[in-house]
Length: 406
Image (tube, rainbow, N blue to C red; front, side, top):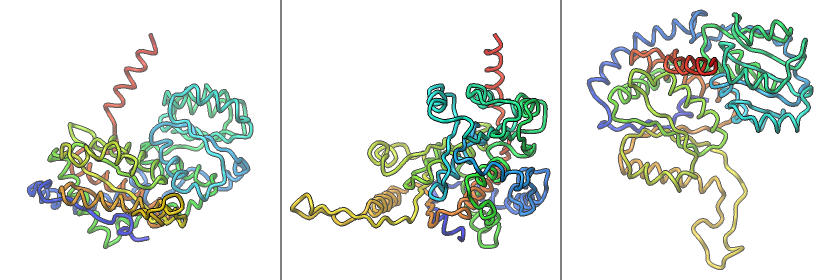
């Protein structure tokens, strides 16, 4: 699956681009590209996740004892769980396991789960890079599943003194070390996403098979064009929001993963887009007026797939007169709505990028993850932002601890 099959069009008009910035970023790209390639092969760097030589902190044979579980519950927050949700959402037609995701503080959800499910029959995977994530620990403790030598718990966290690591050791639970060099939002292609994917019954070799496609010769040209333009748009600050218009339900969770990746990595020093996930065509009837006739301060990413449902409906069965949507399928109508919106964007000179998914497979999803990871990191480097930290978030965590200590 070539990259151009994933990203169909970049339609960003000249009036949105600052030529001086474009030239500056274009000149800097080669230097950053070389740095990026070197970091991919450096095991001490985050980008090593995209290397074919990446070494996991687990062995497949040690996971096989967990394959018997038909129900799996993932407990985590942000990047520790969003990527796994993306995998499940994108490939659920292949998965025969019952999946639960605890990704927020919701006592009703936990109460309902405990009433309906037999805890001993569920495999729990608890993920937190720091081992201190308060929501993850709170959900883990509220579920009351911690027992000495429990055989249905996997803990993924850094090997350091933290509550989650201490629990793993004290109760002799199955433990996998989280890479210190990889932040949560970049961890999907590491132990964090690969272990759940394997236990869902997916092909993890295929999931990582095409993650380096972005750096192929032809795709490098496209990558440069994309990141240089996007960095220019962010720096110019004329566009404030990035709207993910999603015509493919299988991509919903992936787009929430993108939302976090872009917001946390580039939302710094008064820079960044506000990423918004907008389901379509549903939002044609709520947000489209604003999108087309409101402030011209938005960049749109349009996501769709080429699924073709055979089931058609017939207006003539219920009405005597023929209608323009007679003998059509839901996918045909959705495609017509998407293409009509694109035509409206062109007429109004609204900038957009179009992504078309032609196949729902492990290879395609892995490539999608890598495209957005690479673009985001290179854009951060072009803008001289640190794409790996989130200092403002850390400040809120400090405030929270102070309030809870009162």
